[in-house]
Image (cartoon, rainbow, N blue to C red; front, side):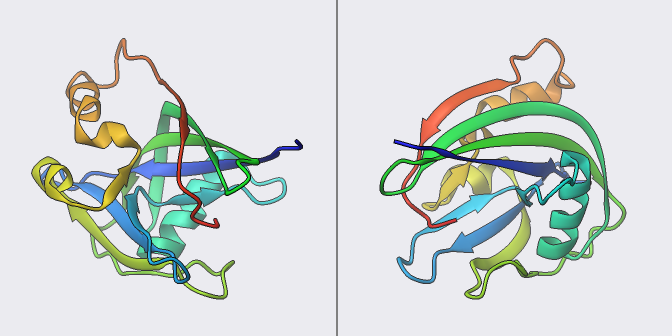
Length: 164
């Protein structure tokens, strides 16, 4: 079986209350929902940093300044399990916290439903899947340590088909 590879870059943006910026996606065909940090696939010769800046602007309406790479996560998705995603998570500073719910200009049918900051407690209480999964636990310890001496590789995961 041939695999298609996709590289995604995402921003870890926190507000002054230590809440994480998340985007709620909903598959318009299946109704499946999930929360994730703003980000998306690299285009052409675009760098991961440039992709973070573009995606945060598209999805949340704000400008950001990406910092350091702190996580790498892989997952395989698709009904035939033939898409291998590699995600790069960067810390980022927002120029403002006046977020909006943006759009994904590459998609005809929109997946983006909401954009908001969520606390650790809200993340742990939501019945909707949250990616990366470490937002429910390990992330907060890594954040408190300044992402020092942590293992940035989150491993490979298998996810449901979301047709992204």
